[in-house]
Image 1 (cartoon, rainbow, N blue to C red):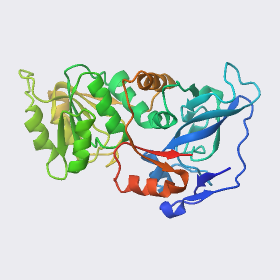
Image 2 (cartoon, rainbow, N blue to C red; image 1 turned 30 degrees about the horizontal axis):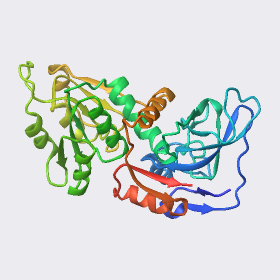
Image 3 (spheres, helix red, strand yellow; image 1 turned 90 degrees about the vertical axis):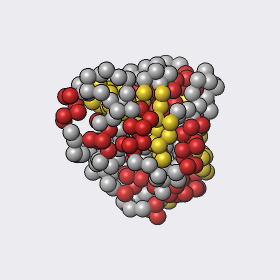
Image 4 (cartoon, one colour; image 1 turned 60 degrees about the vertical axis):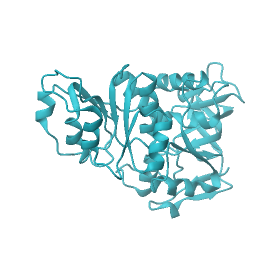
Length: 336
């Protein structure tokens, strides 16, 4: 079997694509899948660096998201699963954890997962599209729909909008009929944010977020007498952006939080939370039903996951380097 592995933490020099590995076999209740496409997420470089605090079993194979075809069924597998069937999977495996974090990832020709994780792939969805969905789009759909309940006509500010979750959040917010302000660095990414539906773009290389957002949405009123300010701020940045974002919400506005890439213990300002009766909503992961809903949206042509580039497996180091260097808009997909 051919796969990408790393055997110790560090930079991308630790990544190796190797041949001749023993392919995993499906045990009881397991399904073996021939991987056709896998995708990187923001956690992949962090796992490689060893910066998460999680214990990573070595050697580790990166990539949690993937799609392919069933190549073997273990004993006791129930249902209508069959060899050759096109499938994807929820990469958070029951009793094992996240693939690419604490369970072997999918940058390999074959993976084995419990049958409970397997999801049928509609004919109209490509392997690459399916691989782009689970972590980024799964997180975003749970954040924007199930938890955030973003609605028609609401004003939504998305910080760090050019990554996988941010891009997905823009698409889903626009699908709900929201008016979206997206933050990103550089004119090229700003143009791409507009192309996927952002109504307003704040170029953080040139503009300070707070003043630019106030110019776009207005200054919220304490008593709710005007419609200025944002109904929703999507903030998985944390750090110095946290207190600032609270000041941009209108009365009864809400903050959606699914991460803290710039720091998890930010300075805050409780006065705005109580004075404007703001709501802070945590969003953690997604369900297989969320993932199935996303596949249906793609199959019906309502959603097209944004893919930055598709790399052959031998170029996975370049895919990592581009992700680390922030030269990415959307998802990094690896063709296996």
